[in-house]
Length: 544
Image 1 (tube, rainbow, N blue to C red):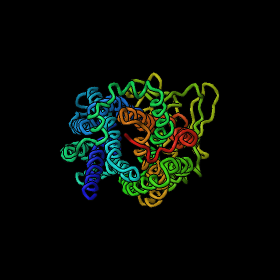
Image 2: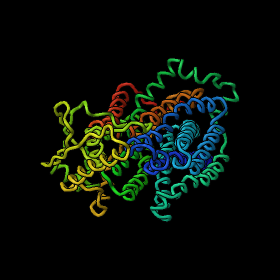
Image 3: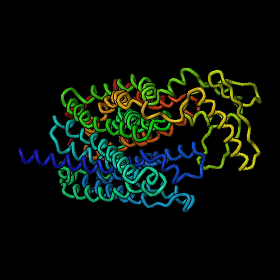
Image 4: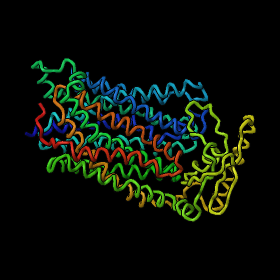
C-alpha cells in the first residue's frame, strides 16, 4: 500500500507540476497586455490597439479546441504520456521564442504576425495538455479519491498564473519599471520559460503510461476512429454537449472573469496601480489553492454536481455587486466623483461609430467619437442622451458642459492637434469635477479588494475543484481524451478566452463600465440551468 501511495503521489505531482509550467507559459501574457500593445500594436489607435492585444491573448484560446482534436486523437491512439510530452515541448518552445520577437518599430507588420503565430502554437499545445493530465491522474486513483487528487489540476492553474504574476512583479522591480516597460526587460519572463521547460520535461519523463490505457492497448480495444466515435455516435455526442453546456460554458466565464477580467477592470477601468492589482490577484491565487482541494475532496463525499452548482449560484449572485465594490475600494475618488458629478454624452446617434479598428486605418474624427473615446479612456460610466440631428456632441459633467468638435478632412498633424485640444478640454472638466487621472495608492484598499474578489474565488474554485473528476467520469475510456478535451477547451478557450476583449467592447459601446459583466453572467446562467436539470451525478462511475 505504501508503494502504491507513493506512486499516486508521483503521478499527481508530475502531472500537476507539468501542467502548472504550461499555464505559466500561457498566462504570462496576462500582466503584460499593456506592454504587448506598445511593442506589437504601436501603429494602432490606443483603444483599438489594446482591444487587439486582448484579442491576441484570445487567439491562443481560439485554437485550443483545434489542439484538443489533434492531440486528443493522438492521446486515444498512442497514449496519454507521450501526448503531453509533445504538448509541453511545443508550449515551452513557443513561449521562449516570444521573448525574441522584434517590435513593430523594428520590423513592422511582421512583428504582430509572428507574435500571433506563436500564440496559436501555444493554444494548440494547451489544447492537448489539460485533458491528458486530468485523465492520467483520474485513471490512476481509487474511485473515492478522484475528486481530491484531480483537484490538484485546479491548483496547477493557480500555480501557473501565480508564477507568471510573481516573475513579472519581481522582474519589474529588479530591473526597474522604465527598463521593464520600455526596454527589453519584459522579455526576461518569457526567456525564463526555458528553465521551467527543462524541469517539467525531466519530471514528465519519469512517468509510466496510464494503467487503463495500457490494458486497453494490450487487449486491442483502442478506438480506431476516436473523432468519429466521439462526435458521430449519439451517446458520446450527448455527453460532449452535456459537458459543454452543463459545465464548461460557465467554467470559461467564471474562472477568466475572476482571475483575468477582474485584473483588467482594476487596472484599465478603475486605474488601480499595477503593482497593487497584481499583488491582490497573486494573494487571491495563493488562497485559491486550498479551496480547490477542499471542494475536490467535498465532491468525493457529497457528489460533483452539488458542489459545482453551489459555485455557479455564488457567481450569479456576486458578479455585479462585487465589481461595484471593486470600484469603491480601488478608486474611491472616482466612485465619489461619479456619484457627485455624473457624466452624460449628448450626441446625434448618426454621428457615432463603433470604435474598433483592428487594422488601424480608420480615423475616428466625428464629434461623438472623440467625446466618447475620451470619456471611455478615463474609465468612467456615462449616460447617452440623444441630440437633434446634425448637432455637435457635448459632454455634460455635473453642471458643466463641454463641446466636442468635428475633425473630418484635417491633415494628420491638424487632426492630432484638434483631437488633443478637445480631449484636453474634456479631461480638464473631469479633473475640475473631482475625477482622478489614476487611483492614489494611499487611497486604494488592498484588503477591501482582496475580500470582495475572494467571494468570487470561492465560487470559481467550487466549480473548478471537482471538474476534472466529473469530466473524466462522463466519458468511456476509448474516446476519453478526444471527447473530454473538446468541450473543455471550447468553454475555457472560446468563452473564457474572449471574455476580456468582448467585455471591453460591450463597455465601450454602452458607456457603462459594468455592462461587460453580462457576458459571463449569461454563460453562467445557461450552465446553471443545464446542470440543474440535465446533468447526472457521475461520482464513482467505472472508468474502464
